[in-house]
Each structure stands twice: as C-alpha cells, then as structure tokens.
Image (cartoon, rainbow, N blue to C red; front, side):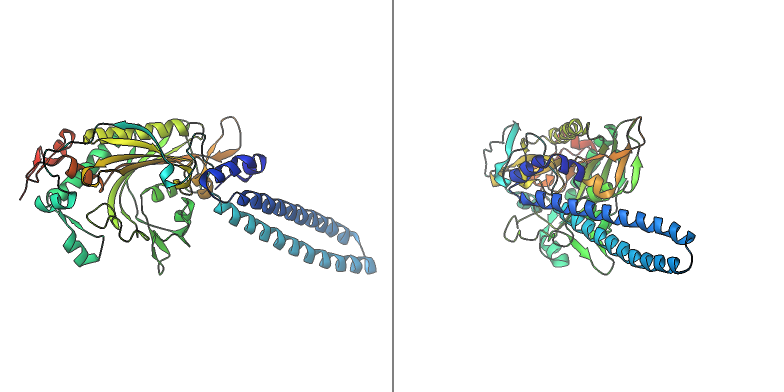
Length: 421
C-alpha cells in the first residue's frame, strides 16, 4: 500500500508512475479527494465529540428545567456524533478501498510500457551451437527416465507431471545447491506453509477477489501460494522488526501452485508452464534506503546460481506495465532454451519498497526517535523446477544423455552424466 501522506505531498510522482504502467492516472486524484473527505469527516466527528464532552460538564452543574433542556441537547448532539463517526468510517473505507487499488510507484529508470517493452541490461554466454538436431526437454526427460507427463495427467489432470529417478534427484540437487548458496550469503533457511489466510495473500499485493491465478479453498478460507514470498512476507506481519544489525534475510523452500488461467494453448508441452512446482525463494526485510543496493545483491546471487549450472542467459529490466501490483522494479534472468530458439524466464527479483510492509503492518524503529516506519521487502528466485528445462536442453548429447554441470555433481553423488535408460 502507498503512503497516503507521500501521495498527498507529491501526487505527480504517482501520476507519472501510473502513466508508465499504462494504468489509470485518475485513480491518484480520486484517492486524494477521498482522503480529503475522510480527513474532513474525522475533524467534524472529533469536534462534535469535544462539544459533547463539554456538554457533559455543564449538565453535571445544571439543575431543574435547565438540566432537562441540556439533556435534550446532549441527546441530539449524541446522535450527531454517532452520524459523524459513521460518516468518517465510511469515508475511511472508501479512501482505503481506492488506495488498495493503486500499484506501487515505480523507481527511477524503470522502462515505461507493457510486457514487450523490457530493456536488456546484459547478455552472458552464447547459445550453444549444435552439430546435431537437439531434442526438447520432454523428449530428453523421457529418454533418461526423468519426466512422466502422461501419468501426471492421469493422476491430476493437464499440466501436472511426475519427476522420477534422475529427474527427482536433479530437482533436489538444484534446490539443495540453491539453499546452500543462500545460507552462505546469510539467509536463514525456511520451510514455509503453502496455505495462507486471505489477509496474508492480500498483504503481499494479490487481489484475492479477482486474481484468476490463485487456488482457493473456500471452506477453510485459505489460499494456496504461488511462491513462498507470500508466507515469508507474512512472517513478520504486525511486528516491529530490528534492522540495526542489517537486513533480515530468509530463504524459503516450498511447493508453489498456480492455476495458469488464460494460458490455454501456451507451453502445453513439458514442464515449462505447470500448476505445481518447487522453488527456493530469497526474501529480505531491509530499510527503504538500502533496498536498491539489496536488489542488486539479489540479482548477483541469482546470476551466481545460473553460472553454476553453466547456462547462457540475459538480464532484463522489466517494463512498468509488467511489474504487477507490489514491485517498484523487477529484474528477470532469462536462460536460452535451444528448441524454442528463445530466452525464457528462470529467475525474477523484485524490490517492493515499503508497499507490502504497509499492507502487512511491518515496521522498524527510526533511530533516535519514537516513531516507526514501514520497512522495505524484496524477493528473488534462486532455483525452481523450470530450470530443468534449460539444463536438459543445453547440456544434452547426441544420444539424449545429459552432461551434469560440475557444480551440481556433488549434489548428485558425483554423477557426471544422466544416462539414457
């Protein structure tokens, strides 16, 4: 959620952000107007309540007919106070509702536009040139006994799968390597809940009433998370955290669930776009002033992981209209997938500044003052199931076997090649 005081003081910043996102600029002025009505209603209610309190003292001193007349006035005033309080609450509800619709203000330098308007910041490595016709990840996965889509669909439906044998081992190797790297960088490892309450889901910026990506359990009023970011953001909700010793960093290992609504016909082959997958996610609480530097560090940790699995990739600065509700800036690392002749997203890291923290009421104490303020939250992917796609395709051999990147071999018991069965 946006700081309404900042919006009131600098509305043009938020209008420009909305324009860059190709979103409704008039929402900014609607919030300002609603907030003005809220403040006027609160002032009116407080003034009437003060008058009511003063009447109480006069009534206590009065006698006879004067007292009865004052009591009649008090009764009338009490009704006015009640009406004013209701009006103030209604105005507050309207202002809060509008404020929850406003996305985070983008940071300086974020490209304007939609999904296709990203900026490539750098490209690392060269796509592999094959002297044979490369197989796609599913064909390789079936040859080495790693992926079973047919039985996944039989058991659970479309876009579900089994990872088995070396496929299961490869995913565990990836996630364990990611967790080891996170721990060495100072992250606390976490196994997170994958079901959360609506206030936690909403707090991270998801629109639970309209987001078609979310799996809901209406009988329990719980939501399946699409990333451990959600649970980790809620971990310190309604708390004052101590950042005096530096950022609080957590690495969440969890299964993730996404309905993939609206993706019919897209990436239906294999495990690129599926309903369930596993992921290690970095999550940081830090000061707003330190958030951009922490964002750069998160990107560097993601690139370190990509180097370990020896994949060519590029880093993009995501355009404003593709940031989602909470992010003020987002960098994606996209690895080259040979059979698609395209770069595909493997990691994403977002700086959400104080947006999620305000919604979840996560604060820090300001040094030398009694006041508290919202912290900044950031998240970033270290490894996920989709990485298997790029690893199998990029490191394949003519017979369908796959060379294991050197950094992964200790996590696979020293295995150097995933052999064809």
